[in-house]
Image (cartoon, rainbow, N blue to C red):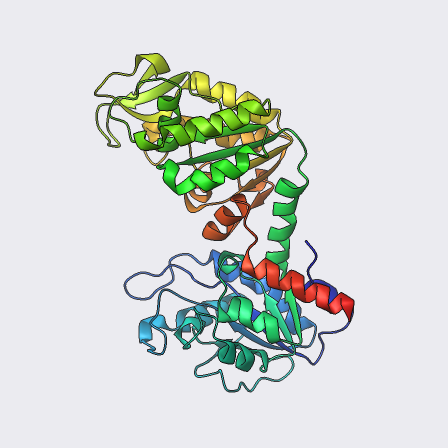
Length: 401
């Protein structure tokens, strides 16, 4: 995908003395007292900010935080805890500016954090008047918030339409590169893992991938629905019987291309859904009426691990069992370690997937870990994200002129 990259603008000497507006993703979790409980997104945003400051820009940064009501600022909506933490990480004061839409005073070498952008009226609906006002604040707009790239909002789309220059920050550019490598020009075989509780939430992804991948591994409640489609009994396991025909259509689509959806040959079952429930390994054909399938079995895990180790590219979205319970985590751990051991380029995304990666300590062995949940899923569906579309269009306009 062709976009203007902020790093290229810096290399070309086009950033010094310019007003740079960075849309970051600083939507971090907080406890009831407003204390930040996990600061990964703040840490991830800092390289772009420091690049801009080092290049001599006047730097403005904004983000959404939580779900504020537009036009009604409340103390809990404030980015004040983010400004404090960012200042600690950067070793400098980070000034927080409220009511900034009509003008911001910031000099080259200075950094200000602009209050929660979703408090501004018209942000979520991408109001054109608001977008033009924000674009007037800067010479260069930098989108470095992949997690919001699937939303056409004022600070993700509108400002990019009207800013003098609109470009991708290093985080967004890295996502574009990783996604292109995994889906646009993958090294084959391309194997995708799509897991979760419901087929209905991932059906469009499964259909889109069934046209591209060489192997489609399903897990969790999704796998149970596919087991039903294969004529197996699943006891009282979570599934969507009304979507069996859809699951069969995915199996058939893969088969028509000479590809496959591996159906579990063994499973780990329990009589109740609990961390201390007794885990029993059974052949897939032997599931009893009162069994709950909570993980894939060791034979299935070993077969899938071999497939992953032989892959050229791996896309991973979702654990294959209830990995939060140790007795039902072996399948997900086996998959995770196989991905880590594979020479394939791997890209992983989704909250539960990131939790599994952290649990097994394989962060350094995954080719790329995507930070955007909803955005990552929409990419897998084959959608063009609004933020990508407008940055690509602006790059074409710049080339044409």
